[in-house]
Length: 70
Image 1 (cartoon, rainbow, N blue to C red):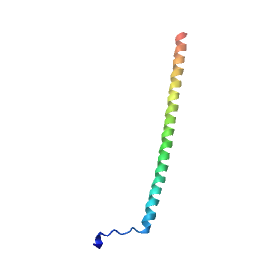
Image 2: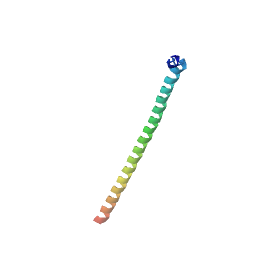
Image 3: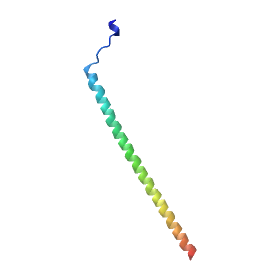
């Protein structure tokens, strides 16, 4: 019957588990923050490229309409 008895975990168990849990939260937060910063930078870069393409198209349209009027 003693083989079925559940022993109390050692005291190190009560320190190790919460420390690993908090460490996982911290690492996850840091990696998530980095991924978010990278995604924001990518979005800003795409927006800047889109604006540059639109400005280039507008300049070409203006140039072609000036040439057509002459």
